[in-house]
Every structure is written in structure tokens, then in C-alpha cells.
Image (cartoon, rainbow, N blue to C red):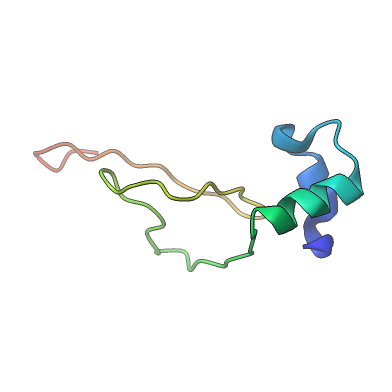
Length: 71
């Protein structure tokens, strides 16, 4: 996690929190880093949200599809 600390310090969730405190928080939350391929679906509508995520690099596209298949 220490590798990403500079990026995390810029995240509004951690603004004003010291580096060592952020690391302690991440440890308590059992934080982990995951990598996803470009076409991977991270989360689908209707699924229970059991985790929160912070995009450290790259981007995430959010798509809403209606019953007729329209985006």
C-alpha cells in the first residue's frame, strides 16, 4: 500500500489525514490492490455492495442498460 500513498493522499476521503494514519486505516480495513482487465465487469446493478473501491490508475466506465438493452 505504501506504493500508492501519494495517490491516496490526494483522494478526498483521506484529505487532512497523515500518511501513517492512512496506512493504519488501510490495515484495519484489510485493504488490497486489485488489477482488472479492460473488458472486466467490476460490479453489476442489483448486486450487493460489500466493498468500496478507489481507482488509483486508469478509469472506470459506468453504464446503465434499460430493459430494452439501451445504454
